[in-house]
Amino acid sequence: MAETIDRKDLEKKMEEEGRLPPGQSLTLKFPILHYGSVPQFDPVTWRFKIWGEVEEELSWSWDEFNQLPRTEVLLDIHCVTKWSKFDTRWQGVSLRSLIEGGYIKLKPGAAYLLQHAEGGYTTNLPLEIALQDNFLLATHFDGKPLTPEHGAPVRGMVGHIPDRPELKTAYFWKGAKWLKGLEFLSEDQMGFWEKAGYHNEGDVWKEQRRR
Ligand SMILES: Nc1nc2c(c(=O)[nH]1)N[C@H]1C(S)=C(S)[C@@H](COP(=O)(O)O)O[C@H]1N2
Ligand SMILES: [Mo]
Image 1 (spheres, helix red, strand yellow):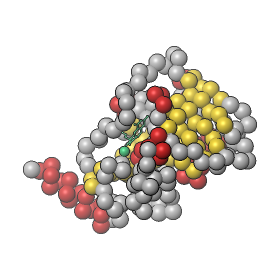
Image 2 (tube, helix red, strand yellow; image 1 turned 180 degrees about the vertical axis):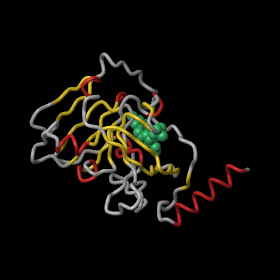
Image 3 (cartoon, rainbow, N blue to C red; image 1 turned 90 degrees about the vertical axis):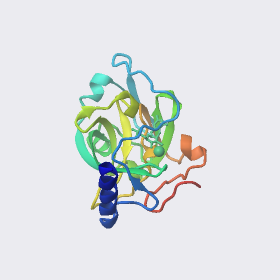
């Protein structure tokens, strides 16, 4: 089958370029993976909240969220269930730009981020990673608004940027779909899969799948 040949060839190319983490295989599809059901998005009642180690708690409406500075990033995404998707193009808001732009004022003790999603899903990252160029509050994939299944209207995104080996990359579960809140913490707190036995750091290059 032509598709199989394409997939294998591309996978080999990614491996040769050093872009295929250990134990991963390339997919041309875009799998949908989550725990629980897909929530409804109501742009009128939706709020995005920011709390914890911040000088001021925030609550943005969908209109307000859409006025934040925007950026685009190309990411290779790696799911712990072993599929990888390359050169995915995302648009949205960089967390670092919100801090640098004074939209969010962190307290000096802030060191970790806990993403809170609709339905109770959570996932944690150190700010060291959440403030890198490969973490995004994404609203669009490939120029189109996120579909409900992929996390509309906003999801956390973490992936690898080719030729940026200095950036740490975590598995894709560390980007919460249907993101509703960011909690800044002085001490690390495990999220949904982390508590269930997945690795707290989840570095794709170190193949940190489970604890
Ligand atoms: N809210 C929420 N976000 C989530 C999950 C989830 O169960 N709930 N699963 C994670 C996992 S394990 C993966 S691989 C990606 C899958 O994103 P996709 O369905 O857009 O491929 O979402 C992540 N974000
Ligand atoms: Mo995953």
